[in-house]
Length: 296
Image (cartoon, rainbow, N blue to C red):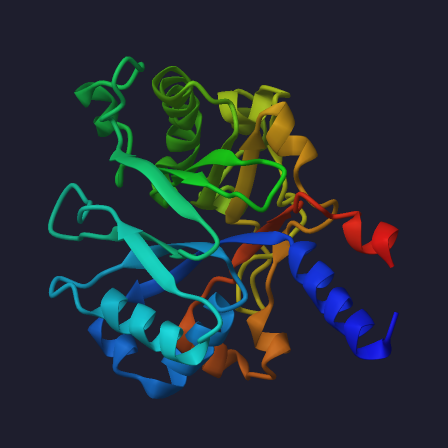
């Protein structure tokens, strides 16, 4: 085989063998001010371009212009992919409102369905359950043709710190509703769960169903640090998965916080302009993860 042909085959096989990166990022009050800050947006876009699918939390933008601006800039930055998004309604019990937004590469993934809890037909969710959550979970079902796990559901959740354990426990009810509605056990629960430090007691956490049930895997460990500030060390942001297919479809040791402060050589103050949280991420195995090794 001639060298140019070999290189072409190598590149093609490498593209096939790429994993799919799922992220969750609390961008801390993302709205008009940050969308108009070129420096912050430049860093944020570089972070998001690493992800094939990212749950953005703490979107606070009554005008509804910040996310379209972000996605437009992302498409201009990374022309090799086409980015789109699906968003929740504005959530909150009082005047303080947030949105969940999933930004994804629409040339890589497809949105099958989405719903705002407790709108789960045939599930256990009721209007009374919404009293537990400060911001009800936003649930999206994705199809991924290039990964071992073809269909999976993401449950985005940003808990209230004061009621974090109660909300995390209630996510177990949300999960049961998803299983009944969409007939799948391939579920990823992710976001800023405030599942660490002063918001969690060791004894109380053991009684949380999402934590005590061994069928759920917590991929971001208690010892991890998902905070930007040097003085804090807390695993607030988590990725929790369920389903044998999903568990076996994860790239080993790929789940971790992404320290963009170190990656982009930022000072703490510069990083805090973007967020006080690091994103958390995990990779899904591609279909042909062994093809490159076997074919060359």
